[in-house]
Image (cartoon, rainbow, N blue to C red; front, side):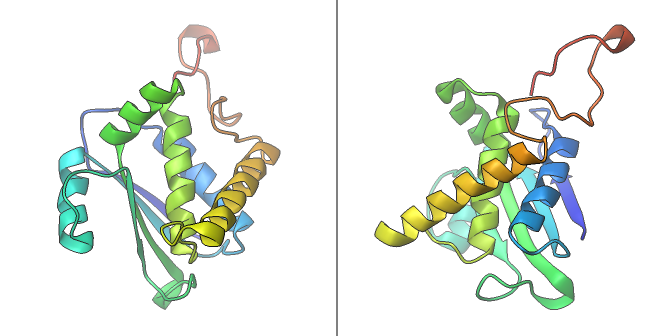
Length: 169
């Protein structure tokens, strides 16, 4: 499995390694541990352009998923697709919810991955409830792996002198 994190924005520092680790755990939990995935971090301007071009919607959004295959299955070469996240929108949403940016980015990663796996909340009703339930199970899978959003990644070294400091993501 190959998870590629591309940071195409320069304004906000994003926890790329943590997102990559969480993406690998999530792919395994979704039954596609060998799938290739690209997570692209962009600005509001970048995602607004994609939103307009591909979804015919104006303005920025928080996440857009581009599947490589059909029906939630990986496409050619085992590529699942791309999850594009606006880090600027994620930061605004995180601040409004009183949560760390890394937690909001993980929620958006989960949302995008579910779309790549064929889940669709936009139909409403049962489909939306099914997607929300799956998202809860994925958050539990992260917690079971010791990589729950909102708490430090156990494989990440703390910042600061002599290993002291606190994680701010």
